[in-house]
Length: 437
Image (cartoon, rainbow, N blue to C red):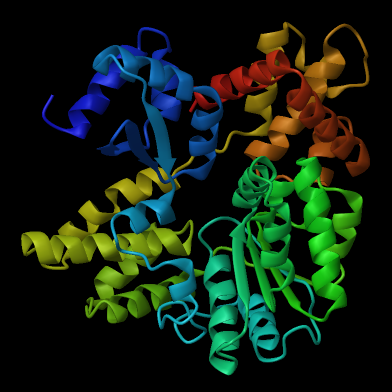
């Protein structure tokens, strides 16, 4: 084996002995081998959902195969996009980003889908803790939420060079708390966040369901709020849809202002492409710009990724920014953006087969054996795998109201936390659904 890629190819071949072809194709298709450092095998996965799923379910398989290959124990680390860029040295540290010219309000392209979030962020940056506290920006990944909170920090840092700014991701907050408890440093951790003039929490939804993290954050939130310090949060959904979030935190998140960011329209995508190209010193023909904006529609990060790839072709291969180069640059991006979103009917069909129940029983009111579990899992999976609202999901199940749907989702989430075999069952059904694409 001559490279880390060769090692990974070998690992995948060995995994096929224990995992099905469908499982490999569904969950491992976006994993890329990056490096081997000491006894740590480093992978990159751009899809956060798949990254989390692999970490929770398949790490032990990967470690076992690596042990067989090298006859020694290996740790496995899976990097998200930001961590991958940091590893390559292409991204500045968080603290540096607060003074960077890259993540500012001036470099943020405003359109109808993000206009309110942009205006609210500017108001918070110029008048922290006066009007909108907390500010919670929610929306899907890659739409500019993190850019906006860095822009807020950028302005506050320029206005006060001594301002204490604390940034943390929701999942990192839990890990940090665990480490602090283990090392007896909870007091230092509390001081770090409770002395901040500006607290930025990215992907705050990840603290939901983590009892001790929520407890700590509740007291930190109160401390900052009562002492007149600004809190800015981002999440992938509004607090009302964070089913495992403590009610007292949900209430506090809703005290200030909730604003959403949605996928950009065509005109905004055109502006984003032109802006990113200009920042990289490229001038793209309008035909090329329009092609990118028409085909890459999922999020801003994918648009920027396409421009970065075009620049790489240009610098490394001497390729012109013509239509052929653009098609090559978009190939991987378009594959990712075509994520399979099943219909409620497809989900119900798989659950019906899994439980051996007629779909009408799952949709209806009957409480025969397995019907309640199948019905609740169906509601949970429709919610997590589609774009349907709670009300729309209720219509699928004999016009149940949204509170019934929400209760079912909570029941599944609670059961998955305390019963590993039940959690595996839900994941297996989900894999079956994805295999139908």
